[in-house]
Image (cartoon, rainbow, N blue to C red; front, side, top):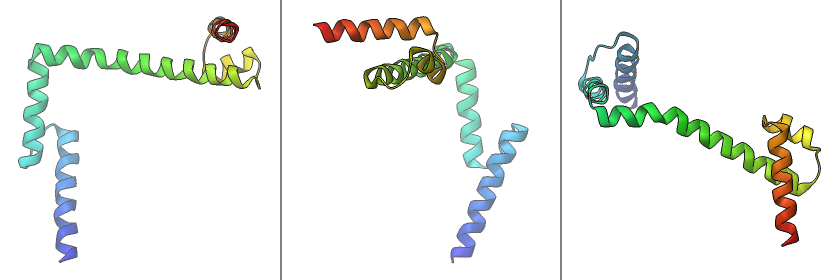
Amino acid sequence: MQKRRDNTSDIEIRSFLDYIKNKRPTDNFTHTIDLAVKKVKTDESLRGIFMCEPIRIQDAKWAARVEAAKKLLVMNVLSHEQIAQAEDLPLKKVKELAEEIAAEKKQ
């Protein structure tokens, strides 16, 4: 019984990979995917969402690097230059963050 289930799974995986390579649906699953892809390509409202996704991802990565830099500044174990290099941030940004943290500590 287990062998048959694995064989079915292999066929489905092959079908999916074939769809990715050739852009031709060969079963119900890949046909469903194909319809969804065509809908996204033709629906202007969905298209806008997907066009902006790389920007959202880039913004999230930037925010994560800034947060990591803040944590490193609070730990006070690395220089500003080392933090800038480690988090791939401009040195000016790290210095601004350091000033913000210092101002928060004074309050």
